[in-house]
Image 1 (cartoon, rainbow, N blue to C red):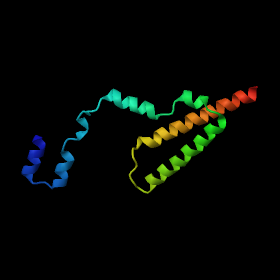
Image 2 (image 1 turned 60 degrees about the vertical axis):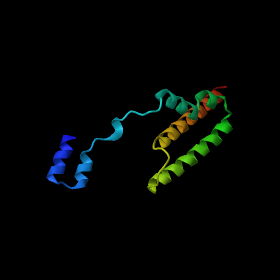
Image 3 (image 1 turned 90 degrees about the vertical axis):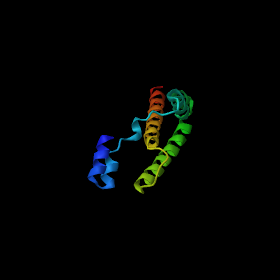
Image 4 (image 1 turned 45 degrees about the vertical axis):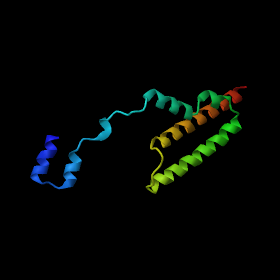
Length: 112
C-alpha cells in the first residue's frame, strides 16, 4: 500500500498503479471447499458407471464427448468465453477413461 501512495505522489500513469495493486486471489472463498468437491464428484463420470455400460453405448458417449470437445476448442480458437477453462481438461480425461475401458473390453473379448 505504501508503494502505491509513493507512486501517486510521483504522479505515475494510472496503468502502472493498477499493475502494482495486490491481487484479489489471496481473498479466501466463502463457499465451503468440501461442498465444492462434492459437486465436482457428482458431475464427473464414474468409472464404475462406465464399466457397467455396453461397448456400443460407450462408443456413442465417446463420440458425443469428442463432438463437445471440438465445439469447445472452436470456441477457444474464436476467442469466445467458455464456461470454465477446466471443462476442456475434464472432457479430455473422460474421453481417455472411455477409450481405456473400451480397449480393456476388447482385450477381454479377444482372449475369450
